Image (cartoon, rainbow, N blue to C red):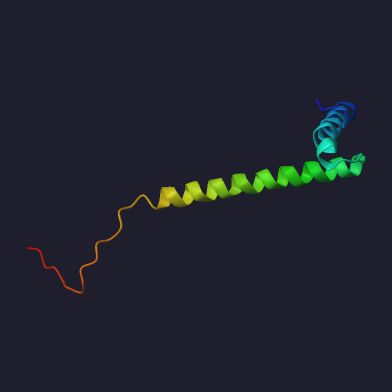
Length: 80
């Protein structure tokens, strides 16, 4: 079953109302629907970038788990 457009519109309306409730007092002016949409996209994008950086750091840390090679100062070691 496909979600109804009315349900999606209601969610967007609630999201816009909540964005206005949070940001209007901080900005000191009334926000339009477009202002609220832009704020939502910007905040979502910001946290998306933070999540991407976290995943990249975790991936790099997982790959760095191997012990670093010990320098041998140019000497060759022949073990028998």
